[in-house]
Amino acid sequence: MRRFIYLVQIYREYVLLAFLIAISLALFPFNDNPQIKQLRAYSLAGLGLLHEPVTLLTETASLRAENERLRRANIQLADDVYQLREARLENIRLRRMLQFQERTSYDLVPARVVGQSMDPVRRTITLSAGKKHGIREHMPIVTDGGLVGRIIITAENYSIGQVLLNRDFRTSAKVERTRVDGILQWDGASGLILNNVAKTLDVNEGDVVVTSEYSNVFPAGIYIGVVSRVNIIPGRVTKDIRTQPGTDFSRLEEVFIVLYTADEEKVALEERVEQR
Image 1 (cartoon, rainbow, N blue to C red):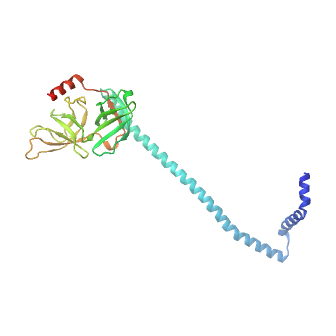
Image 2: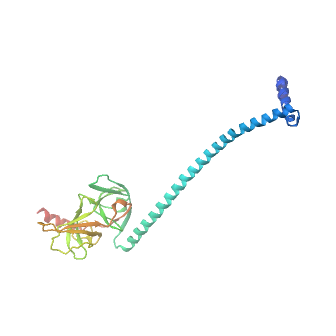
């Protein structure tokens, strides 16, 4: 309090001036002098002119803040919609995979596709299951759409699979209806070729192609795809049989690894014959 009184004494002229200005402003609206009235009118007009740009600036700042808030909310809503759509699609995929797992007789290990090679002719996929899950080399990879490929490399927690659309892929296959056997390989595009089928044998468009019991990698009867075209080429003793795989490799996200290995005794015996 003493400090306040001391400051008032030092600046008493300024304090008195401020007090008198405040009294003048308070009495200003009640003065009926014509000059004062005119001054009051000019003052009000000036305040009106100042009010509009000030209000505009305030509203502009408010609109910018509101637009930013709405933009952020829109981004959040778009992300929420995307997440819901992804969850719904994943639920559909997993439901199909579960149904496939329930109706198959094989022991299956589910895995997610966590990577894939960019080599267009040696396509491979990296899977989220490895040795600790019981995965070994040459085990088949399947989906509810059919055969995907086989395991070629394993680590503790991951493995790499070679898919059907790979120029190094070969397997024995057969036409389910007529039991006609052939060697299945990639056609260099998005389909497969069933080779070594004599043109006298019965194979038609729409026939189902499955793995053969002659394969040293896959168990017999795994669905591969359907015959999409059969061509007879003059001068050749075999048919040109094009097969459309049942798996959509462009949308491969979840797969199953079949806990199956070929009979080692059978494989060793056949290898001995080939070496002779």
